[in-house]
Length: 141
Image (tube, rainbow, N blue to C red; front, side, top):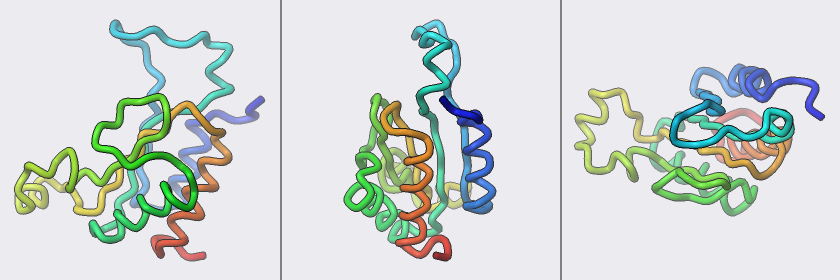
């Protein structure tokens, strides 16, 4: 049983990762889907997170590390799935936008989007991200 909320843990993790981490918890009610039994929600974790790696090269290195070394999730274009999916937006979902327009919009070429699925524990996910950002040089070891 969690002794703290996923939102609190991610907010603390954001502070640890610095200004380039962004977090948006996504457990919300909608007319298009049913919310899980509230008794189950504290035992699972899922949400969206972004990490700005600065460049596409660094973003690709982070994605590769998360997928191939950490078994964190899968590199994908579409982020809708129960398991963890991740992408570098500037070269996938927003690749049709001219790089000059991406820059004008504030879309970094190294923006990594993580759609964190319902598999795995929050503690494990945070450890995997921590190891990966350190492994690719985005944070000090």
